[in-house]
Amino acid sequence: MKAMIRTFQSGCGDCIFLILEDEKSDESFHIMIDCGIFTPEIKAFLEIDLGLRIDMLIVTHYDDDHVAGIIKMLLEFGSLEIGKIIFNCFQNYDENATVKIPAEDKQLLDQYAANIHLASNPNNTKISATQAALLSLLLKSNDKWFHVWERNILAEGDSIKIGNDSKWGQFQVLSPSKEAWDSLKNYFVNEYVKLLHARPPQTAFENQDAYWEMLLRIAALKPQIRERIPISSYIISKPFLQKKASVDPNETDITIPNKASLALVWECKGKKILLSGDAIASQLYEAIKKHYEGNHIMFEAIKIPHHGSKNNMSNSLSLLVDSDHYFLTGGKKNEGPNLETMAKIILHPIGNGILFHTIHYNRTLNLTELQLLVKDEYKELLESCHAKLTNENEYTFEY
Image (tube, rainbow, N blue to C red):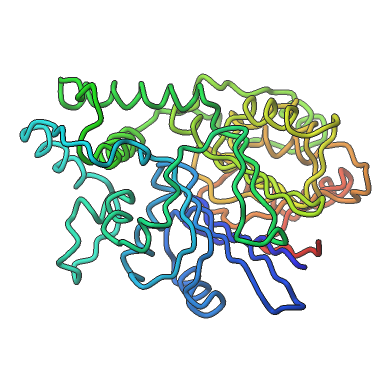
C-alpha cells in the first residue's frame, strides 16, 4: 500500500490531495481537501490523473481560500464522480421545514450573495447567481452530490470511515470542538442581525444551510487591519530565530469560522498524517493529547495550520508533534507564513529517527517572510538546524 500527499498552488488558499493506492489489486482512493482557486494545473490533475473521480471531498470551512475553487470545479464538471462529501454547514437542520424568512430579507440576502467573489458559469442557465456563489445550494442542485453529502455535523472525537475497506484507513476529527461549533451558530445569528436588523426565525427555516453559509462567507470577506513590522532590515541568525520561536500565538485574533475549521488525522496501520485546516493551536494540542499516547507524536506528514500564521502554532503544539515533512500551503501578505511559525519548525529538536525537517512550500508571491528564508544566503544556517525548504510538493510513503 502507498500513500501520496500532494499540494497544489491555489492562490493564497489550500488545495491538498491524499491518494491511497493498493498496488496488488490496482485500486486507488482519491481524497481532495479544499481548493482556493481551481487552476489549470489542478484541473489537469483531476482529469488526467484521477479520471474525474474523487472518492472523498472535504471542505474544512467557509473561507473563500478554501471553498471558492471547489465551487468552480463543481460548476465546470457537473458529471464529476464523488463518493462522499464532508462539509460542516447547517446541513442537519429539518429539511421539511416550511418556515420562510420574510421576502424582503430574502431579497436582501440574495443581493449580498452577489458580493461574494466567486466564479460564475454564464453558460449554465439552470444555475442562479446565488447557487453559483454557495456550495450548499450547488450540492442541493445535484441529486448525486446531495445524496453523498454527510448529513451529521462533525466535531472533535468523531471518526470518518474511508471507503468500504479498512485498507484505506480512517480520519480522526480533532477540530472543531463542540464549543467552537456552538460559537459559530451564535456568530451566524449576530451576522444576520447586523445585515438585516432583525433576528432569524427561532425554528428551522427554509434553506437555512444556504443562508448560514452566505452570512459566514460575507463576514469572512470583511477587511482585517493587520500591522506587521517591515522585514527588509531583518538579518536571519540562530538567535533571531530563537527569539521568534519563543513567541506564542494570540488566539483572540483568530476568527470564529477559523476556530470552527475541520482538522483531521488520517490513520492506517500505525501511520498518520495531520491535516490541520485553519484550526487553532490550543484545540489541536488538546485533541492530540486526548487521542494519542505520549508527549511526542510522530506523523508521516504535517500540514502546517492556517498557512503558517503565527497565531495558529504554539510552542506546546510544535513540540508535541513532529514529522520529516511539513507542508506549507498558500499564504497571504501580512497574514502568513510568519517567521514565528517557521522558526518553531526549523529549531525543532532532531530525534526519533528524523534527520531533517523538510518544509514544502508552494507559493512565495508577496510572502515576504518566506521569501527571506528561501534566499541562498540562509541555506547554510537552515542546514545547521537540520532543516531545509523545498518547492517540491509531493511526498509518497508505504504503509
